[in-house]
Length: 167
Image (tube, rainbow, N blue to C red; front, top):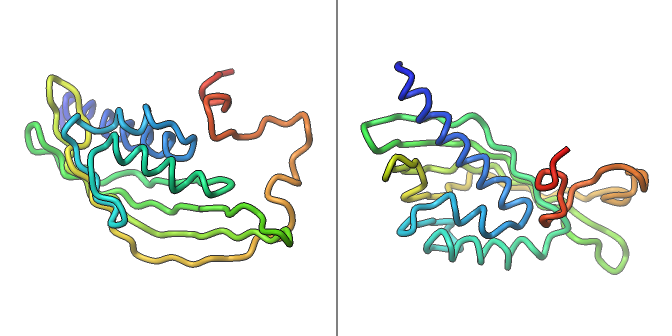
């Protein structure tokens, strides 16, 4: 493996991580920036462009209190200006408490099967297919945020999150 291949792999991996971050922070610009302008996303319940996917994510995931996507290191197969990429993911979707204060966590095991293309020297998603492997829902006991003290740094699903402000 040469330096150019290592750099390509790292750039692809960064795009995957940025898409997970954009999803969990509800950042449509970051999500859309991970796709080529003609890129296509097939999440089964949604099929369309990267920009339209970002809008759909905002609509669907805004109904949850929090989400967190844990992405594994991707398997990347480079072939010139195209890369075939498989990434395993475990995603948590914490519901908002109901009238009785009950909440749940819908946990999903899924895989992102991507075709990345390098255009004008930049690797981005040309096509993504989301393959769902399993899911289950568990009750959440106690408050979702109740453990954290008032002066602790906590996550935010907005540009107010520490990741955007820096340290």
